[in-house]
Amino acid sequence: APENPYPAGLDDALAAWAWLCEERPNDRIAIAGDSAGGNLCFALMTKLAAAGRPQPVACAALAPWLLLCPRLVEERRQRKLRTDQLLEGQPVGEPVRILNRENSRGEPRRRERKGIFVRTVQAVQDSILWRKGAELLAAQYVGDADATDPLLSPLLASDDLLRRLPPVHLQADKDEPLMADSEEMFHRCRRVGVPAELKVYENTHHIFQVNPILFREKARDSMESINKFFQEYWQLNAPDPTAATAASPMQES
Image (cartoon, rainbow, N blue to C red; front, side, top):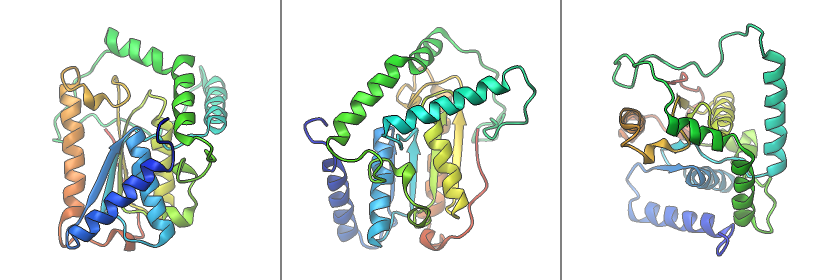
Protein backbone atom coordinates (compact mmCIF):
# COMPACT_ATOMS: atom_id res chain seq x y z
CA ALA A 1 0.00 0.00 0.00
CA PRO A 2 -0.91 2.54 -1.24
CA GLU A 3 -0.02 1.03 -4.62
CA ASN A 4 -1.60 -2.32 -3.67
CA PRO A 5 -4.13 -1.79 -0.88
CA TYR A 6 -6.32 -4.42 0.74
CA PRO A 7 -7.06 -7.15 -0.21
CA ALA A 8 -3.89 -7.52 -2.31
CA GLY A 9 -1.66 -8.50 0.60
CA LEU A 10 -4.15 -10.99 2.00
CA ASP A 11 -4.72 -12.48 -1.46
CA ASP A 12 -0.96 -13.01 -1.78
CA ALA A 13 -0.84 -14.62 1.67
CA LEU A 14 -3.69 -16.96 0.75
CA ALA A 15 -1.97 -17.90 -2.51
CA ALA A 16 1.29 -18.59 -0.66
CA TRP A 17 -0.53 -20.69 1.94
CA ALA A 18 -2.32 -22.71 -0.74
CA TRP A 19 1.00 -23.32 -2.52
CA LEU A 20 2.68 -24.46 0.70
CA CYS A 21 -0.16 -26.85 1.51
CA GLU A 22 0.02 -28.31 -1.98
CA GLU A 23 3.80 -28.60 -2.12
CA ARG A 24 4.31 -29.79 1.47
CA PRO A 25 1.09 -31.66 2.36
CA ASN A 26 2.73 -33.72 5.12
CA ASP A 27 4.59 -30.87 6.84
CA ARG A 28 3.48 -29.08 9.99
CA ILE A 29 3.65 -25.44 8.95
CA ALA A 30 3.71 -22.49 11.35
CA ILE A 31 3.54 -18.81 10.47
CA ALA A 32 4.99 -15.66 12.02
CA GLY A 33 4.93 -11.92 11.49
CA ASP A 34 5.64 -8.61 13.18
CA SER A 35 3.58 -5.41 13.34
CA ALA A 36 1.68 -5.17 10.02
CA GLY A 37 2.98 -8.65 9.19
CA GLY A 38 1.33 -9.85 12.38
CA ASN A 39 -1.92 -8.35 11.12
CA LEU A 40 -1.53 -10.37 7.93
CA CYS A 41 -0.95 -13.57 9.92
CA PHE A 42 -4.18 -13.13 11.89
CA ALA A 43 -6.09 -12.01 8.81
CA LEU A 44 -4.96 -15.15 7.02
CA MET A 45 -6.02 -17.38 9.90
CA THR A 46 -9.37 -15.56 10.14
CA LYS A 47 -9.93 -16.07 6.42
CA LEU A 48 -9.06 -19.75 6.69
CA ALA A 49 -11.36 -20.12 9.69
CA ALA A 50 -14.26 -18.52 7.84
CA ALA A 51 -13.71 -20.87 4.89
CA GLY A 52 -13.32 -23.96 7.08
CA ARG A 53 -9.84 -24.60 5.68
CA PRO A 54 -6.86 -26.13 7.54
CA GLN A 55 -4.92 -23.77 9.76
CA PRO A 56 -1.18 -23.48 10.42
CA VAL A 57 -0.12 -25.57 13.41
CA ALA A 58 0.87 -22.40 15.29
CA CYS A 59 1.40 -18.66 14.92
CA ALA A 60 3.93 -16.28 16.49
CA ALA A 61 3.31 -12.55 16.22
CA LEU A 62 5.55 -9.73 17.46
CA ALA A 63 3.47 -6.68 18.42
CA PRO A 64 0.85 -7.42 15.75
CA TRP A 65 -1.26 -4.51 14.50
CA LEU A 66 -4.74 -5.95 14.98
CA LEU A 67 -7.05 -2.92 15.08
CA LEU A 68 -6.93 -0.61 12.05
CA CYS A 69 -10.06 1.43 12.75
CA PRO A 70 -8.90 4.88 13.99
CA ARG A 71 -12.18 5.56 15.78
CA LEU A 72 -11.99 2.38 17.85
CA VAL A 73 -8.29 2.89 18.55
CA GLU A 74 -8.96 6.40 19.87
CA GLU A 75 -11.92 5.22 21.96
CA ARG A 76 -9.71 2.58 23.55
CA ARG A 77 -6.96 5.13 24.21
CA GLN A 78 -9.42 7.50 25.89
CA ARG A 79 -10.76 4.68 28.08
CA LYS A 80 -7.24 3.86 29.20
CA LEU A 81 -6.51 7.53 29.96
CA ARG A 82 -9.64 7.80 32.09
CA THR A 83 -8.75 4.58 33.91
CA ASP A 84 -5.20 5.76 34.55
CA GLN A 85 -6.52 9.05 35.93
CA LEU A 86 -8.89 7.24 38.27
CA LEU A 87 -6.13 4.98 39.53
CA GLU A 88 -3.50 7.70 39.82
CA GLY A 89 -2.21 7.88 43.34
CA GLN A 90 -4.31 4.96 44.50
CA PRO A 91 -3.04 1.50 45.46
CA VAL A 92 -4.06 -1.01 42.84
CA GLY A 93 -3.93 -4.77 42.57
CA GLU A 94 -1.20 -6.60 40.75
CA PRO A 95 -1.55 -5.96 36.98
CA VAL A 96 -2.18 -8.71 34.49
CA ARG A 97 1.13 -8.30 32.71
CA ILE A 98 3.53 -9.12 35.52
CA LEU A 99 7.10 -9.36 34.27
CA ASN A 100 8.94 -12.52 35.24
CA ARG A 101 12.31 -11.94 36.78
CA GLU A 102 13.88 -14.75 34.79
CA ASN A 103 14.57 -15.05 31.09
CA SER A 104 13.61 -18.00 28.87
CA ARG A 105 16.70 -19.92 30.10
CA GLY A 106 15.73 -19.53 33.77
CA GLU A 107 18.51 -17.02 34.46
CA PRO A 108 17.87 -14.02 36.74
CA ARG A 109 17.23 -10.76 34.95
CA ARG A 110 19.35 -7.73 35.69
CA ARG A 111 17.56 -4.57 36.72
CA GLU A 112 17.57 -2.03 33.93
CA ARG A 113 17.15 1.67 33.48
CA LYS A 114 15.83 3.32 30.37
CA GLY A 115 18.56 4.82 28.22
CA ILE A 116 18.23 8.03 26.22
CA PHE A 117 17.43 6.12 23.03
CA VAL A 118 14.61 4.11 24.62
CA ARG A 119 13.16 7.19 26.34
CA THR A 120 13.22 9.08 23.04
CA VAL A 121 11.55 6.29 21.07
CA GLN A 122 8.91 5.78 23.74
CA ALA A 123 8.19 9.52 23.74
CA VAL A 124 7.56 9.33 19.99
CA GLN A 125 5.38 6.26 20.44
CA ASP A 126 3.26 8.17 22.98
CA SER A 127 2.94 11.27 20.80
CA ILE A 128 0.31 12.48 18.37
CA LEU A 129 2.97 12.07 15.66
CA TRP A 130 2.84 8.29 16.10
CA ARG A 131 -0.96 8.21 16.20
CA LYS A 132 -1.40 10.32 13.07
CA GLY A 133 1.28 8.35 11.26
CA ALA A 134 -0.45 5.10 12.14
CA GLU A 135 -3.80 6.48 10.94
CA LEU A 136 -2.24 7.50 7.61
CA LEU A 137 -0.61 4.12 7.04
CA ALA A 138 -3.78 2.27 8.00
CA ALA A 139 -5.87 4.40 5.64
CA GLN A 140 -3.50 3.69 2.77
CA TYR A 141 -3.81 -0.06 3.33
CA VAL A 142 -7.55 -0.11 4.01
CA GLY A 143 -8.39 1.97 0.97
CA ASP A 144 -12.14 1.92 0.27
CA ALA A 145 -12.80 -1.09 2.51
CA ASP A 146 -14.36 -1.07 5.98
CA ALA A 147 -11.64 -0.88 8.65
CA THR A 148 -13.88 -2.82 11.06
CA ASP A 149 -13.81 -5.88 8.77
CA PRO A 150 -12.12 -8.68 10.78
CA LEU A 151 -9.90 -9.34 7.78
CA LEU A 152 -8.49 -5.85 8.32
CA SER A 153 -8.90 -5.66 12.10
CA PRO A 154 -8.62 -9.28 13.32
CA LEU A 155 -9.22 -8.12 16.88
CA LEU A 156 -12.87 -7.71 15.85
CA ALA A 157 -13.29 -11.31 14.67
CA SER A 158 -16.18 -13.21 16.22
CA ASP A 159 -15.64 -15.77 18.97
CA ASP A 160 -16.75 -18.48 16.57
CA LEU A 161 -13.92 -17.62 14.19
CA LEU A 162 -11.34 -17.13 16.92
CA ARG A 163 -11.93 -20.54 18.48
CA ARG A 164 -10.84 -22.12 15.18
CA LEU A 165 -7.40 -20.51 15.36
CA PRO A 166 -4.26 -22.52 16.17
CA PRO A 167 -2.09 -21.84 19.25
CA VAL A 168 -0.66 -18.32 19.24
CA HIS A 169 2.43 -16.77 20.82
CA LEU A 170 2.42 -12.98 21.20
CA GLN A 171 5.19 -10.58 22.19
CA ALA A 172 5.19 -6.84 22.83
CA ASP A 173 6.79 -4.12 24.91
CA LYS A 174 4.59 -3.12 27.83
CA ASP A 175 4.74 0.60 26.96
CA GLU A 176 4.29 0.49 23.19
CA PRO A 177 1.02 1.52 21.48
CA LEU A 178 0.33 -1.97 20.13
CA MET A 179 0.62 -3.63 23.53
CA ALA A 180 -3.15 -3.26 23.81
CA ASP A 181 -3.67 -5.24 20.59
CA SER A 182 -1.56 -8.15 21.84
CA GLU A 183 -3.11 -8.09 25.29
CA GLU A 184 -6.69 -8.06 23.99
CA MET A 185 -6.04 -10.82 21.46
CA PHE A 186 -4.35 -12.91 24.14
CA HIS A 187 -7.35 -12.66 26.45
CA ARG A 188 -9.86 -13.26 23.66
CA CYS A 189 -8.02 -16.38 22.52
CA ARG A 190 -7.87 -17.77 26.04
CA ARG A 191 -11.56 -17.10 26.61
CA VAL A 192 -12.55 -19.20 23.60
CA GLY A 193 -10.12 -22.02 24.40
CA VAL A 194 -7.25 -21.26 22.01
CA PRO A 195 -3.83 -21.95 23.61
CA ALA A 196 -2.20 -18.53 23.91
CA GLU A 197 1.01 -17.09 25.31
CA LEU A 198 1.83 -13.43 25.89
CA LYS A 199 5.45 -12.47 26.50
CA VAL A 200 5.92 -8.90 27.64
CA TYR A 201 9.19 -6.97 27.58
CA GLU A 202 10.09 -3.63 29.14
CA ASN A 203 12.54 -0.82 28.38
CA THR A 204 12.49 -1.61 24.64
CA HIS A 205 10.36 -0.33 21.76
CA HIS A 206 8.06 -1.52 19.00
CA ILE A 207 9.69 -4.53 17.24
CA PHE A 208 12.92 -4.14 19.20
CA GLN A 209 14.03 -7.51 17.78
CA VAL A 210 15.27 -5.69 14.66
CA ASN A 211 17.82 -3.92 16.87
CA PRO A 212 19.83 -6.85 18.32
CA ILE A 213 22.91 -4.71 18.88
CA LEU A 214 21.16 -2.51 21.43
CA PHE A 215 18.84 -5.23 22.79
CA ARG A 216 21.11 -8.23 22.43
CA GLU A 217 19.88 -10.30 25.38
CA LYS A 218 16.22 -9.49 24.90
CA ALA A 219 16.31 -10.13 21.17
CA ARG A 220 17.93 -13.51 21.80
CA ASP A 221 15.42 -14.28 24.52
CA SER A 222 12.61 -13.37 22.11
CA MET A 223 13.87 -15.70 19.39
CA GLU A 224 14.48 -18.52 21.86
CA SER A 225 10.94 -18.19 23.17
CA ILE A 226 9.50 -18.38 19.65
CA ASN A 227 11.67 -21.40 18.85
CA LYS A 228 10.54 -23.16 22.02
CA PHE A 229 6.90 -22.41 21.20
CA PHE A 230 7.18 -23.66 17.62
CA GLN A 231 9.06 -26.79 18.59
CA GLU A 232 6.14 -27.83 20.78
CA TYR A 233 3.71 -27.76 17.86
CA TRP A 234 6.08 -28.91 15.14
CA GLN A 235 6.42 -32.31 16.79
CA LEU A 236 4.62 -35.10 14.96
CA ASN A 237 2.94 -36.28 18.15
CA ALA A 238 1.71 -32.79 19.08
CA PRO A 239 -2.04 -32.45 19.56
CA ASP A 240 -4.16 -31.16 16.69
CA PRO A 241 -4.42 -27.41 17.45
CA THR A 242 -7.84 -27.17 15.83
CA ALA A 243 -9.13 -29.72 18.33
CA ALA A 244 -7.74 -27.97 21.42
CA THR A 245 -10.31 -26.73 23.89
CA ALA A 246 -8.25 -25.44 26.83
CA ALA A 247 -5.90 -22.46 26.80
CA SER A 248 -2.34 -22.90 27.97
CA PRO A 249 -1.10 -20.97 31.02
CA MET A 250 0.01 -17.42 30.34
CA GLN A 251 3.74 -17.09 29.90
CA GLU A 252 5.22 -13.64 30.26
CA SER A 253 8.60 -12.17 30.89
